[in-house]
Amino acid sequence: MGLVGVLLLNLGGPDKLEDVGPFLYNLFSDPEIIRLPFPWMQKPLARLIASRRVKKSQENYRQIGGGSPLRRITEAQGQALKEQLRVLGQEVNIYVGMRYWHPYTEEAIALITQDKIERLVILPLYPQFSISTSGSSFRLLERLWQENSKLQQIDYTVIPSWYKQSGYLQAMADLIAQEVDKSEDPDRVHIFFSAHGVPKSYVDEAGDPYQQEIEECTNQIIKTLARPNSHTLAYQSRVGPVEWLQPYTEDAIKELGDKGVKDMAVVPISFVSEHIETLQEIDMEYREVAEESGIHHFRRVPALNTNPIFISALADMVLEALKSPNLKLSQVSQMKKKVKIYPPERWKWGMTTSAEVWNGRIAMLGFIALIIELITGRGLLHMIGIL
Image 1 (tube, rainbow, N blue to C red):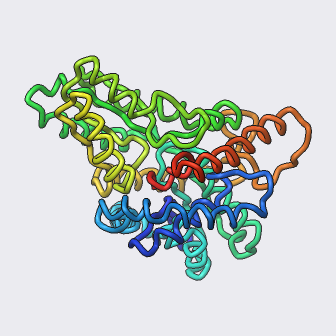
Image 2: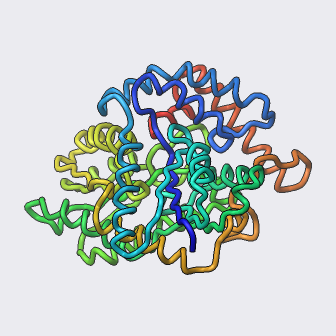
Image 3: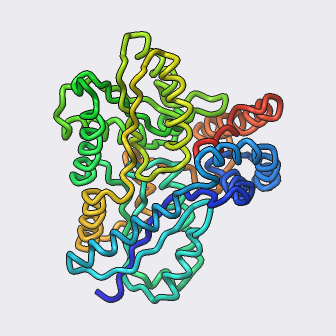
């Protein structure tokens, strides 16, 4: 088989407070975050946004210790995966490629070519596929492959999503059970799944399978848990002036409080590592919302991190991918619908029906959100609080 590598993909986060500004610039330079009709505007706008939001974002990171733990946790997951695969008889090199901060995806790719990897498994650490997470990384990788003849010699395969993998579901169910059982009346704990949200237009018009995969994943976890508890699925981190997937986490928590729920366990379903969205947004902001709503027992199920069952699940996926027919980067853009699930990097701004829909939505999202942000200091650019 030759030398085998596994590339773990994740979002990334600033390691220290001084990194926040450059991290924000990288984030908002991605057209999947703010899509503009004129590409030359992307970087100047990103620079403006980053400079306006850096202090607020630094405060959020200061509340969780001065930086994101995402790199440290992801590297620990990679080491645990390497050791588990060795136990199963498969030697691999592990590489971590972050989208917006070190180690960048480009840095990981440079190491992969330097190490002369012959067989590569590309594994996003997002259980469910979304345009704005796995999709953004896949598009970057596809471009890197097209530009680098050395990469084209590597026999690679992609795992696009894995939200129904049995070991992953079992690990999630076990963590939920452990948290629920801390209650005096475990069966009465309301299990609250909070997923990262995306604009509704991603699902309706771009064909993003994210909502469907999140809903299926929630149902599979509840089935695996096999408990009588009631549960809710909601979406956090809504930003900007457009409609996002509903119900929104904050609204759903208030509604459950009004209905008399007193004991809640929040499950960060779209995250496998602790980061600012779990440590600050859920643990601090949503905890406060819950307490104000009369939910006095607010528990949060920990992220998977290096949970042994989860690591074994990742190892099983890698071994299965090595045995299965290759799935290429160009193929992962053709799922669920007969159209690409993310808009191409450059499309024609013409008068076709699809172009009119996307051009209108994009212009509205980019320009209206910017105006709202610049006037009020809130809106789309609150996005920095979720990463």
